[in-house]
Length: 540
Image (tube, rainbow, N blue to C red; front, top):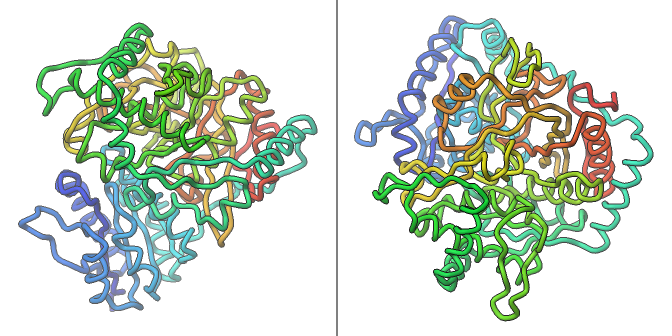
């Protein structure tokens, strides 16, 4: 007798995203169903495809609740994901489901399906809900088939997590610095300005106050409507001054005349208004970092926040002045921005900014989506020999131009896709420069804060591969191509508790190891449980 398996598919809130993703989602479900049948399982969709909408994705929390009422709570359940998904569409049903749960992704970067998979996984970890996870290029490889067979037979998949280590003894000098900065944060406190919480279903990105406060960090809960209102008080002359500063810095704007499909001068000026308004509100509330949600909310009012986010994260940026006193706000400093109001990233960005500044390193930091990757052999553009899995990290906004080889001159501002950004606007598109990096992720598990952290390097892939990665994903967004030392594809996917990870550069490998040690010590000092991931970091 065949093993009965029920399949659900969580989707986006935006209709255009669901209809665009559906062909790939349908292919994933077909291939998974075929593979499961070969192992003795019979997969049944929990709900039919809506022919009128043109897809079979859950589009709201209410729809998800209604569907889960019809599902046997003890049946083996699969959540198949080929695009971005709003976790809360299925969270209520998953939390009360008693049978084994498997999350499944297709290894493809065209749509952010792997990003959606990791978001759901991180959210389930935060919620304390047991699940298994698996991914595959074509659902015929041994890794996938062996994992699926294990889940069908035992209800779980055990992945190799040998890359995760306890923290060894830290070097004395950077450890002392980290502890000192941690003590200062707990004593003096810091504020993160949250422009509306819970972006795009990211349950994993919300840090409960009772976990956040012991670190010394507190939320200022702000409204995106207040940000929009503040934009209306910014004069055209002030906005134009920001645009002129960026033009003089060498930033390229790809301008057209059709506001529906092109980036226009008016859209850029509105983004300059948002930048000024965000800095002024941050100053008014004493914020040490800010996060703008944009999706959903501001997308129906104004151009994208992405250009704003990247500018905030850069030390060199257009000056903003207090309306009454004329004083420059946050002079000579980045204002860390946590994209999509990811509060876990906010903790990380604050720590990074303070440690890198204290060490005399360039403090620019950002988060990226864990978008895709593949094994690469050959030589990169710096002469580095490659025989490594090279990740594509990509995000729509928040990347500072200091992460590019030639700053503003390396960046282009192109119109964001109309499918997601009706009112246009652009981001800082560029390729992240080669160099040594520290990567990390703060997350919630077992009602406590944790951090995975490790070392890696951004690499300069051959130009044709860089262009291929843009063409097959999102060609208007910034990208980083990176090796994570001692962490391969399946290690990362099995362990990572989020759709995002934080990156920052160091001058060289030795400096990166010092920053790594200081960051571990600071995290431990403020009460975060730290897990060292990978090798070649000077600590293991």
